[in-house]
Image (cartoon, rainbow over all chains, first blue to last red; front, top):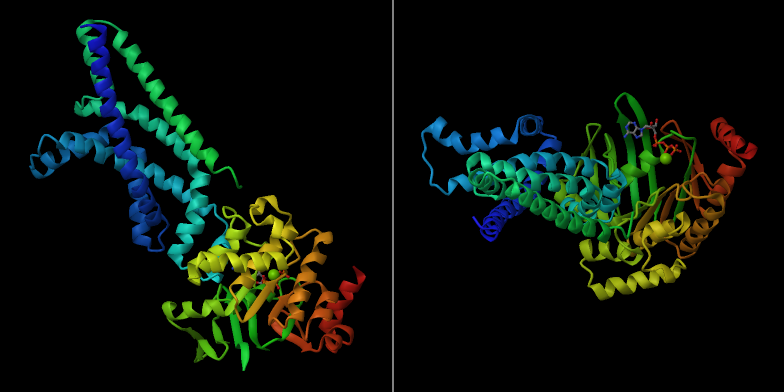
Length: 216
Length: 253
Ligand SMILES: Nc1ncnc2c1ncn2[C@@H]1O[C@H](COP(=O)(O)OP(=O)(O)OP(=O)(O)O)[C@@H](O)[C@H]1O
Ligand SMILES: [Mg+2]
């Protein structure tokens, strides 16, 4: 295999890795907010359920969760799913897992906003949802961005776990190439790509943080 | 007709009875100061008056509209969607300002107008400009709260409350969080509002200020109104022993 072919395969894999990364964020960031609301709910049952959910998601390996999402429907209910379900189950597994982490970050952020902000908004006739959307959430986002950045960077590296379900993302491809060629080159190249991916994301996140530094 | 009336107000936190049968009525243009020792229930009274807390018992009325009625000793409030209409009856100035830190000074004043008063951006901006000028903060419109002194922040928060154009303004120790040299600024602003006959209820530890600005002074202690009347009567010639003791402590300071 030529060096160019190898790079091409790795980059195709990288595109898939990026797909997993972007779709996971797209679903888990909003879902995390919903879970955070559940966790903070005054309804004891809802709060207990979300607490258990968060604890399972954070307390068991993501790899295991991916396997359960993928094989679960067949083993438990005998449903055989379309081949595309392989990729879909990766997105479901990642989103459910990361939503749990994001939920705890959101909760910490929301609980750190002083009560006076809600009270001022109430006296100024904001509705509850106006208060949350215009007053609370922007401040929460500023406070949690550093913690979210950590998770996002972990997610980049975690996308390699999709190899568990034989998704042709970068790590899966690198492993295949290394085995066929009996050479480390593919691993080194993949490492460099992951690193660059991380660097780009970290820079973007830093920009976002900076854009909110006009107040404290 | 009173702008604000609270009758037989009762409020407890757990076993602690904080308000015990308090009744206060404020007429249009009247300025009422509330003084009293720490923990006597002054903030709780204001928080009940502004619906940040709910009364256990009693009635609450704004300009003749009853929002909470006493039924068998229990305060029964209007449904939430009904109640909302009456939030615009009053404004509240907090001890620690509670400005919105992510909005600049102008936006702190205009956003509530745009959000809940459905003002047009142009109207809101004009109101904002006028009030900032009045507060001597015209040059600070683009500043963020964190770039202002405490006194300036409190003036912004007063402007923000005034912009809502409510019938009555409540102040909870508006100068307590400020350095002594900045309290004068705020007291002057409140005096200028008094000159314009703004209806106000002011909780304060500034006894001399209360005497000079108010039409009526209420002395509260342990959740009851111990004494009330003309400022000179209550502050210079208190009749009740508890009032005397409280004012004596102030003289000593
Ligand atoms: N949310 C609450 N939960 C429990 N107790 C409370 C609560 N708010 C106030 N209290 C108690 O009620 C009493 C009256 O408090 P309040 O803040 O109304 O006093 P205050 O007259 O404003 O005092 P200060 O002059 O120190 O501001 C205090 O004993 C206080 O601890
Ligand atoms: Mg108080």
